[in-house]
Amino acid sequence: MKAQELRTLGQAELQKRLLELLKEQFNLRMQQRTGQLSRPSQMQAVRRDISRVKTLMTEQTKASAGTGQ
Image (tube, rainbow, N blue to C red):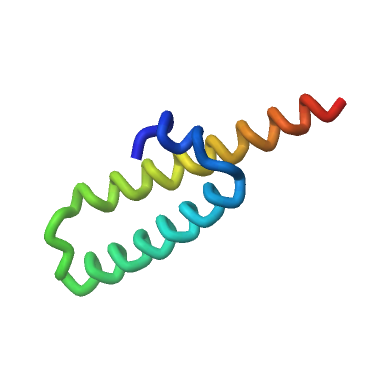
């Protein structure tokens, strides 16, 4: 998912998306350990998506804190 698409989401939606991505990462790790992972590049893509969501959540938090003063 691209950062531009994520920017349209609110804080609650980003939190929900983060939870989904963490669950997906866990499932991929289990598949990797059991040798059932068909696309190893999928692990990297999920890890990057998690990072994007966390970055945008931080940006939104800082932006809302900056406008409150």
